[in-house]
Each structure stands twice: as C-alpha cells, then as structure tokens.
Length: 258
Image (cartoon, rainbow, N blue to C red; front, side):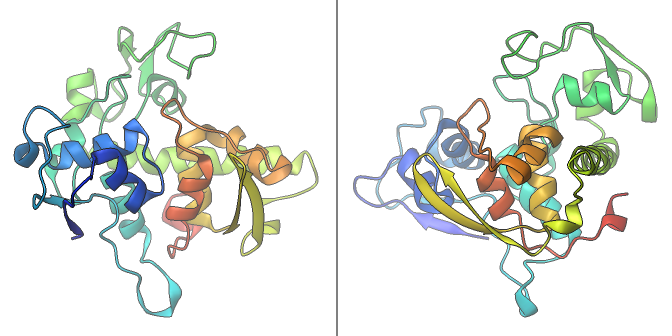
C-alpha cells in the first residue's frame, strides 16, 4: 500500500499530480474518497503531517519486468476507477457525479452494449445523449440484475461485466484495424511516440494498456490512437495515454478475458 505524508503547500491536486502525473478533479477526488475518513467532509482541509493512502499506485512491479497478472491489473484499475484501495468492498457501490457506477465505473452506454440495460437516450460523453447517466431505463435481467441496486450490490456481475467489456472492445478494435489491413498484433511490443497537450510521450503498446485505454475512451478511441496517433481525453481531462501507459505492462493474454 502506498502512503504519503502531507507536506507544506500540498493540495490534493498537487499530490495527484505527483503520483499520477495528472492533477485533474477525477484524480484528486480518488485520493480524497480513499481518505475521506481522515480528511473529513472538506477536501481542502488537508493538514501537514496527515498520512494519506494513494489508491491505484500500490502494485509493485514483479520480477521479469511484468507489473503482475490479469487480476493484478484489474485490482489496480478498479482502485483508480473507484477511488478506493484494492480489496475495499465499497469499490462496487461507488457512483460518481456523472452517474458512472461500480468498481470499474460503468456507464449506461456500455451496459447497453453488454446486454444488461436498455434506454432510448443514454449518456454518451457529451454527444447526442443526455448530460449524465440517469439510469431511468430498464434492466434486462442478465445475471439476475434487475436494477441499478442489484448491479451495485453484485461484485460477481461487475467482475463478469468488465471481462465482457474487454472482450467486446478487443473485437471492435481488431475489426476497425482490419479495415486498414492491420491487427492488434501489429502494434504489440512497439514503442510509439505521441504528443499529449504539447508534451512528447513514448509508450510501449501492450495488451493490458490497450484494454485500459479502450475502457476509458472506447474501442474506437483506442483504434484512432493506434492508427492516427489521436490522443483523446475523458470528461475530467484524463488522457487515454495515461491509461495505456499506467495499466500497460501487465501479463495479460487474450484468453484471460475472451
């Protein structure tokens, strides 16, 4: 577990920048939610000497260069997405201010694609849909999930759904790449250099990084990154490159999720 002692001049945003390279609200709020019991109800009231847990950076690299296995990757991703430390059962009940839910922050559009949910006008990231996930539609009963409450209280359904999401995105990415005569295999192990808000970043492309990047920005956002070097950001300003890099390097194989 990674801990940090608050220093003079620190803010949660500065601490998030130190550990995540990103001081945006989504990043500092993950630190805040993991330490709410220590900090209190006002995220601005951190004090020098306060010891904070930093979620999502507590997975040490394993020998041989791998950060860990598929389960380790899921735990690291789930800690960052939920803002709660790995192993905390409260991860599954988290809902953010845009209505994304659970350990992996599922939205309406993804759960529609996975067959859990139906609504005529889902949240879609500021496009033609609504301005957040309102969860006013209906649930299909898949895996005995008949309500948002059922989903939030079913770790097994959420763990199954993230694997289904990875498999769906994997197929969509490969299908998009094939239209250009390529496949994911053409990129694995390659070091590619991108420009992220004026900064050059070189990242090794791995299966776990591809899965994480697609979870943040969708299969087509990840395909555009590989094909066009198109760097995109989520609603909180988090770069797709951060997920491709930070969650890259885990020992993940397609059979782990397909």
